[in-house]
Length: 481
Image (cartoon, rainbow, N blue to C red; front, side):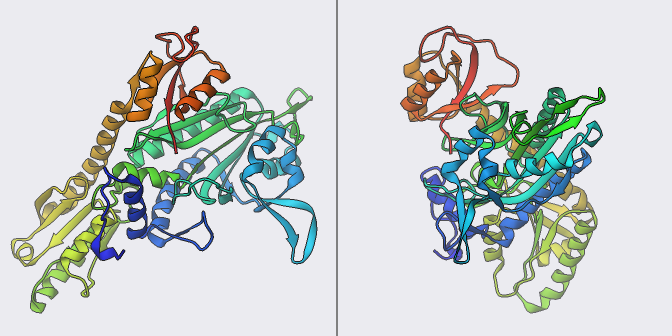
């Protein structure tokens, strides 16, 4: 389909087709020759760069440094942590040859970096003076996806950040895990306007090899949950097999404690689905590569000079104030075509400048989130643009927060539990006995999993929703991507 005809699928009728069209027609990504891989186009990459910049700033302010580790990992490294290895083996791409020569040991194409990172940490850490070691990686990982793939949601290669830290005690590691979880919440809620539920994963759902896993979970318009990020306390599960020890202040040797944490470009998929509409993307101002687009409107060539001059002046004023601004002076497209293109790309605010606006010393502002128009005097343009961007940011979050709250249903009856998940979806708040076999039975019956257990235990309000035994936890169940 050509970009000129815009989005032809209805979001409420066919979310999957609508999503695919938005990704490709808004020029976020394209399909690669190998199944399960995508090409990140410049506009999609610019959104990822904004997300990366917001998080990278927080991490560096908290004392973390960026590094890079190799893509290929010896199989023997993965085998050192048995649970970790068992969990990732089905997803690993393996390198077995160098040219025509068979390698003496298979090399895994990085599915995650815990093993290669910890092997290095064992060489770098000697005493308590070397701790904490706070390193973050911005890279890609490869995991063979045998199920249906979808850009940004589930692909065999994806961009992400993965943090790997080493600490002297469990308490220090706990603090790191929770600090990162809060950084993620700030990024996802405050910048991306995506409300989330924070909590712990169950033993069944936690990261392979972790002591415990914390998570941030969002709900999408089709009623499915999406895991937005995770932060793990790995305990000493990696430090012992990799022999990460330090000489303590007590002159004794101690095994260190480690954490890992990450978010991926899956954040972009949630932004698309949650905020987008029938016209295409809606990008929150704080992560928008272009926050304001100026479109000059003239019908006679003699009008162009004055309108262009004004558009350049307005753009310069906004840029000087730190607002990401683009003036679209392309003559080969009509103003209406430009309106549609920038709406498709989700630019938060459009400024229209025509002959009457030059004459009356004004501009027309059009909000992407609700299509509201307002006429603003030239001397008020900067203040009004700032105000509009702030209001768009607040409105997107408030709208999404309401949808999240309306998606949560509390149940005590298992038939109701199954009916809600089959017909409506969303989060189902229910009591659980804490037994893995019961959790697995629920997944077999409904395809739903425990998405999160609240950070602060909530008092059970009934017996276990499935088995009827005394409940030990309140859990939030949902089907997921």
